Length: 427
Ligand SMILES: NC(=O)c1ccc[n+]([C@@H]2O[C@H](COP(=O)([O-])OP(=O)(O)OC[C@H]3O[C@@H](n4cnc5c(N)ncnc54)[C@H](OP(=O)(O)O)[C@@H]3O)[C@@H](O)[C@H]2O)c1
Image 1 (tube, helix red, strand yellow):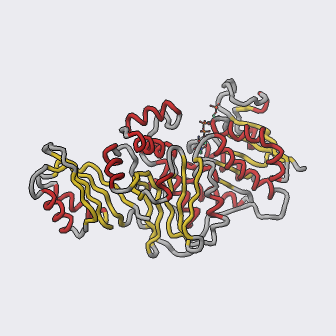
Image 2 (cartoon, rainbow, N blue to C red):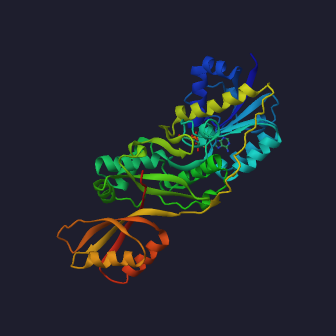
Image 3 (cartoon, helix red, strand yellow):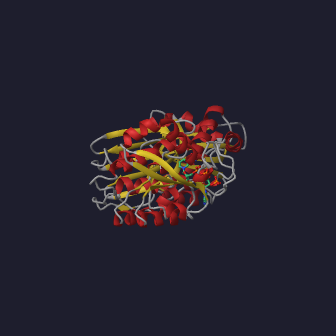
């Protein structure tokens, strides 16, 4: 059996997972790959660090050249994280005609197209299954069996940390700060959770999904996004009284020949399949014009699930090595000539703190009407206090219409505070 030599960049969480799976499932992996996989060298920062797996010291190195200049290494597996130097190392590997597998959403979202072109020019593969949804086979499913579809919409819970926090707030009636602290203690949130809780991580993943499903290039910086830090247990409770759960959704939706896209905490009906995706689990719900509704669900992070996706890519490449099959893949063409259109329209949930006096609801409702917004439901929670929560669910409107309404409303002192503005998805 032909030997495939692998150069691993990184032996942290995911690198260790990959190493462990190759050790335990070696014969099965080799059978699938139709080759014998061998990790020849591993790049790390610190040679003296204690490792969770037993690796011969001569396999570890701190010199990238030992991997990139080694003619015997066929595949570079990048598991360093961050953009630099991961991007430069991947680029150099592709130019050196080495296949590259990565789990790095930040690099793929920001430099994926450039790296893909270099891979094609050098007749090698660049694969990135683990960059979105950890162990869930999303990228390959979109690019292979589902690629014959024209996608209408994608909605993903693609960040496990925020989904864990929102689930715990929902199930135990807790505030955001309390749950974040426990999530950090349990390892579900990082010490600096900002990329997760501010929606940046989800925006990276949405950018990759849009490229993979629609063939459109959207910089993560141009994806309208909002995180979950302002969500309160009250909003979760009121949403639940209307029959909704609050989830951080990464959404791309086709309207005519426009594609709207954004990352927002969103109310979704309890009956929607995404509403039951709890804790650290991830899911992608999509609609294709042939396949119709479909949901992919599983563990979106963790050494073994993510390692499984990484090894899946390694196996696909290994099968092709030494054959006449073209190893390259590319992002699809934007054959529908879709235009990017940002946020689009949405139903909205609005939570006001309003003075409890006659005519207050009429005043707000008139302002909505003045700006062409129609109201689906309104609920007032009277607590015998001067200011009370008033919740509106609004029919589809644009964010600019809402802003104009808020300008009008806040000229008067009836509304003390616009506490929450959240999107609402229907099923
Ligand atoms: N964690 C997850 O659940 C998950 C899920 C999906 C995708 N991913 C992606 O997988 C990638 C790896 O994540 P991770 O959680 O495994 O990261 P990690 O635990 O921080 O591990 C990073 C590894 O890379 C090494 N490293 C970092 N920078 C280096 C440099 N400049 N030179 C040499 N070695 C360097 C570190 O060496 P030392 O060990 O010597 O410090 C460490 O072994 C990231 O792109 C991440 O986004 C992670």
